[in-house]
Image (cartoon, rainbow, N blue to C red; front, side):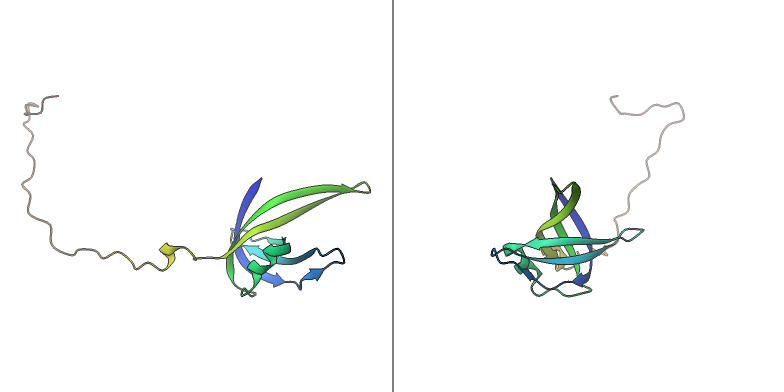
Length: 123
């Protein structure tokens, strides 16, 4: 199941390397909702590279999966980021605003309706 979250990077933690060759990097996003929330996510293995060039305070869109597991009778939930993009990367973000034609509108005669309801409309 995929989810999407938009917010500002609050904390970027250091990369964690494990003996098995696995590595990850955690980060915290502060959402842009009416009541902002601090959400901790993880970038696993090659996804860590998507955090390069980002810093605290950058606004990002994060697509992530929700993962759960049980270990010794305790239950854990992980938010695994699989796409991290700086907000506004799309083509529309840098597109210029459309130009508005300021030419005056042509004069149009007002429509007159007979008091008795007679008109030339077929319906």
